[in-house]
Image (cartoon, rainbow, N blue to C red; front, top):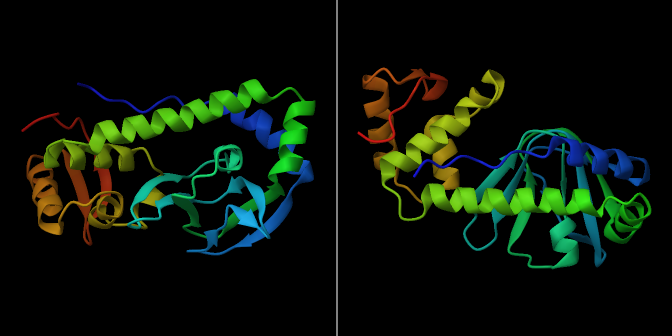
Length: 209
């Protein structure tokens, strides 16, 4: 089965972003800063204007996904609190926060609930996509999928994290199994890797080997 990620709903994200930004408060964000879903027991929405934000699973610290673009986090947690994941900034950036009740009032006033449902459906679809990548899949296919994901990042982003570290943060695969698959792809000429294990480029990688 050929699995592709869901299409990012740019228009809906931009409409929500533009509506919430005027009522939001800027945050000073540094690398590895953890963002709380609540501040003084008040649910928060986070509006990412610039930066890298990762979603981390609380139970084992597994990295579920990283956002490199404008985004809005906290809507589902404010509506249906689970607290099974948290947000972590990967580098300095521009992030704003707003009390969820204030944000939802703006969304209601500007009739943006359809956009909210579209964005939340995108997040939900991404979780299904990730499960399809890693659940009961062969190691090669998992490594292939994450290398292709890395290939979509900017060169600047790719050169900040080695392939091994990128995949280990997102899976429970062993170091040796990841490196073995990377070596197969490198020897086959499907990927080009810089000294230190950084991905320079990826070609058309076969689904199986």
